[in-house]
Amino acid sequence: MVYVSSARPASDIARCLDSRLSRVHVSKNNGVTDLTVGSSSNGSYFITLTPSNGGSVIKVVRGTGDDPPEEEMRFAIARCTT
Image 1 (cartoon, rainbow, N blue to C red):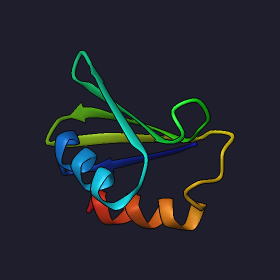
Image 2: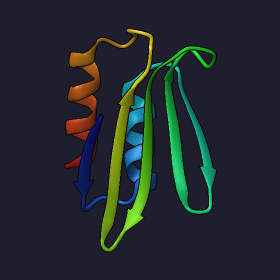
Image 3: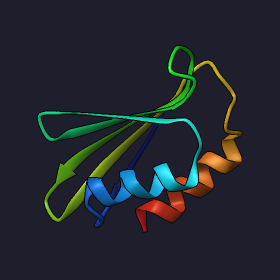
Image 4: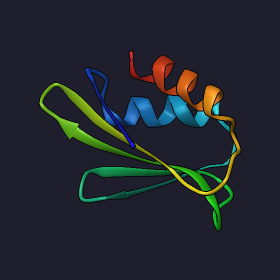
């Protein structure tokens, strides 16, 4: 599990991750954005974007799948949160 904070709004981060990664499923509930990366039945990563003062808090949890590879996911998170 990884926690990261960013000055970027959750909507910008979600759009960026969706453009960089394949099979991203997005849902929103009470201002929180949840992304599942990988197959919808067997997600590889679960990302929660929570609005925070002046930005977002990002929580990333690894699921059971391995697509995309961890290196690709780390790069996408780094690029989309800065």
